[in-house]
Image (cartoon, rainbow, N blue to C red; front, side):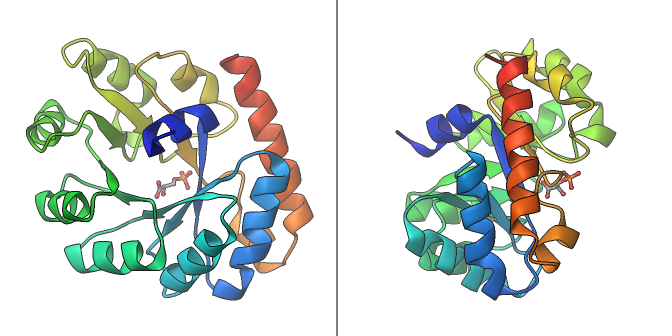
Length: 210
Ligand code: 3PG
């Protein structure tokens, strides 16, 4: 299965911020145990590269790199084992470097112009970020009308309360968020707590999009 199909099958993408790569294994285990073997590890912390390396080495979880802002970070992420790249905005440089590596890339796009820029780069799936403050599910539904072939992965401000609004839209391939992997639980090494939240999220998503 290709990466986009795997993300669609997962429906939910945990957006992970790790302060310490020592926690990467425990977190990956918690995600797998909760039934969601996928993680977008963000380059918001210095631990991202090593965390991606450790998670990828397990072989039981799809690992993407998030918050990738530069082509150099694409190189680092891919070398560490990231199977896909996520960028908050539509950066031609980031997209082209990912394409050179042959890895899937999801640039952020929330306007018609940004979506057209992504299309011109040969992409048909974009991250819709920050979803909550960019018009949410209604904005995606409006953009899906002219852009019939485009799929969206909204992230930012999505949680159990509004997940249903997003999953009701067929153009939404998957939904990302940090609600099932709270930094506080990870820092406290409460990986069972993470597994419980992940399991609840998976059950909720399954009910909303059987
Ligand atoms: C992201 O990087 O995709 C978002 O910051 C995650 O947003 P959330 O914390 O609101 O889920």
